Image 1 (cartoon, rainbow, N blue to C red):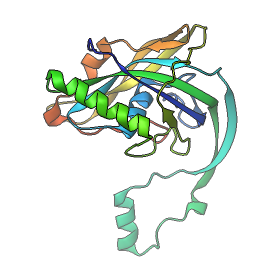
Image 2: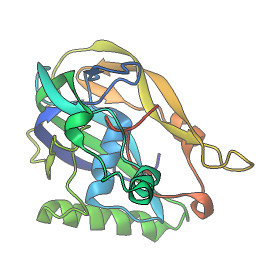
Image 3: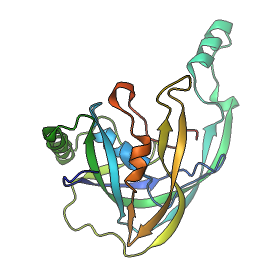
Image 4: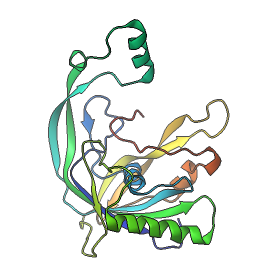
Length: 238
């Protein structure tokens, strides 16, 4: 983290699902937004390859509400190789009604968070910190984003705005258990680019989830080998 004041943005939505990776079939959301999901929201608003976002804390603004729903989904993941084989064999492509199944999800409802994060340029030039922070703040003020941010699942749209100063974290504490932080990528060798999940022991303290700074030292990738990372959602395999 830096000595600069972190940026702050309020995000909210009607539904959210930050899927626990140990749930393989039925989706069950974490009780709180994960750091990787928070980073993904910020990257959807503003991102450049010269820096990365480091989440310092997530403030829970609304009471915890769970909601159960059942959706029709398909079993097979879309892939370029599968589409090429359909075209080559002349089988006519993919028919969703032949691969459809119902899955139950336990999601969150009426969520709102205040995200605090630091801009971490790969070149430690003093002016870059202020430059990227100001660009992000201008985009938030205007409601601009590179793509529509979402809360875990793409259909769960996230809204965002500047904090107005009245936001207060809920005054309660609880242990959250083992939470997914992010992915650690192999930087060199034959397995370069492969990823393994990084977890940490999470807890809410007076409504605030604080992210240990030591975790970023394990997952930070230098700019020559860094690629834009998509944040983890229900479509990701861990």
